[in-house]
Structures are given as structure tokens and as C-alpha cells.
Amino acid sequence: MTIRSDEAAATLADIENVVAKVKQSRLYRKAALVIILWGFVDLARDLMIGLEPEWFGPRWFLVDLVGVAGTLALLCYRATLAGRFPLRILAAFALFYAFGWIWSHLIGRFGPREEMAFWPTLFLFGYSLAGLWFGAAFAAIGLGLAALVVAGYLWTGEAFILWQAAVTGFGFIACGLWMRRG
Amino acid sequence: MDAPDDVIHQPIRLRVMAALTALGPDEEGLDFSRLKSLTGATDGNLGAHLDHLARAGYVEVTKAFVARRPRTTVKASPAGRAAFARHVAFLKAIIAGA
Image 1 (cartoon, rainbow over the protein chains, first blue to last red):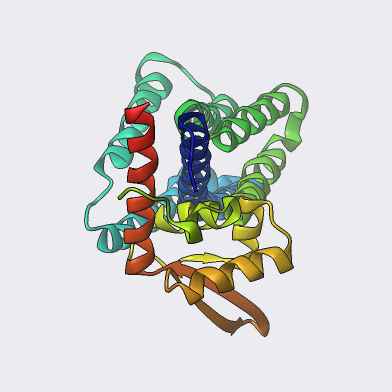
Image 2 (spheres, one colour):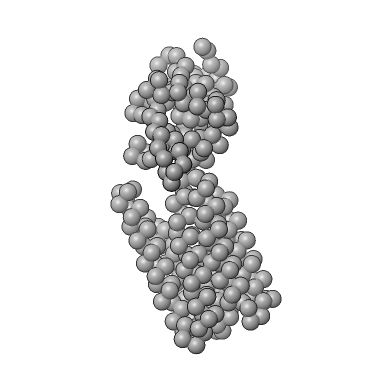
């Protein structure tokens, strides 16, 4: 069997294409668990705020702490398999959080409704940025859900908290399940 | 190496090996349906090519029941990884020599 150089180049391109798809699929599967976890966290938090606003309104961060602990547990579990901790991912989340805290508490004067819209959109734009490097699914999730959050902020009135529970809660869970299938 | 690996060079088998070797040796492997979507092959066609690769000792095929459903998982063997690396080196040598 003889192979011409153009055939060899086409074959190598085919190999690279398959390898890229497998790597992207692995990345999606890894990210999916964290996305599903935050879907449940968002759903629980927003439903609790909606049902018990007096008690839970000022204490919403308690549920988020469960999400942070769960995310760290997942990252640590992966670190034991991969042999190294994904410090850059953790640092990226910490930087996003620091940026959000500075703007929502120090510089900006956000009311509860603005804060409820600000935090999800901040992290969803982070997903959109990640999509530029790691795959269109991240960008689609980020931009799609951010648009729904903004629409809810503008037009859902008193039902905004329930809208948030549905959009970020069920939205993240559905997106995570879809990414796991990939 | 001055000849291609005839087992690997066939397009479907080449894609199967590319997909399986993209995973680390300690990873689980890929299931049949994922390989089907990556290669664009039909069930019967992919099954025949996997048999061919398994007979050459290039892949290990594991069949199990997960949640009462049959699941076929395929993993590259060390011999398959080495053969695929040699085949890729051969292709690169053709381009370099052109």
C-alpha cells in the first residue's frame, strides 16, 4: 500500500478532528457535574428565598456555601485521579467572586433584586468566556441563561425569584445533563 | 517504519484508534454508542471493525450490564497504543519527505 503526502495529511487531519472531539467531550463531562450541582444549589436557594423571604433573604449564602463545598469536593476528587489540583479553575472562580463582591458591595449600591440578577449574570458571562476556548456549549449556556435572567429582571415583577429558580436551577441541571450525554 | 499498519489505516478503524488513544491508559475507555457517533459507522459496521482490532490485539472490548442494559466499552491496549503511535509517525514521515 502506498500513501501520497496529501492522503497522509488528510488522515492526520481526520485524527486531529477525532481527538479534539474526544477531548471536548471529556471536558464537558467533567464540567457537567459542577453545573448540575449548582443547578440544584440555585434551585434550592431561590425557592427558599421565595418561600421564606424574611428568614432566608439575608442568609442565602448558606446554601451557596454548600455549593462551594460540593465544588471543592468534586475538584479534590478529580485531583486524586489526575494527580494535580486544578488551581487555575479555583483561582478563576475566586477572581470572579472578588470582582462581583467589590462591585456589588463597595462600589455599586445594589438592591436585592439587582443583586439577584447580578451574581448569576456575572458567572454566566464567565461561562460565555470559557466557551471561546473550551467549546460552544459553555457559550450557549452562558449567553442563553444570562439573557433569560435579564429578561426576568426586566419583566417578571414579583415572580422574579421563582423565575430565577426555574432559569438558573432547572436551566443548569438541563444543560449539565445534556453535556454529560455528549 | 516503512509501511503503513494495514489494520489501523482503514478510516473507521483509524478513527476508533484515534478516539481511544486520546484517552489516558488509566481511563475507562469509550462506549459503543460514543464510538459510533465519532466514527459515523453503523452498528454492524463498527462491530466488525472492533472485532478486527480486537483480533489484532489493539483494543480490549468489555461487555457488561449497567442498570439492566447492555453496555460495551472499548479501550486501547498497550499494543494498540504503540501501533497507533507508529502509524502516526509513519504518516508524518510521508509528509516530511514530500
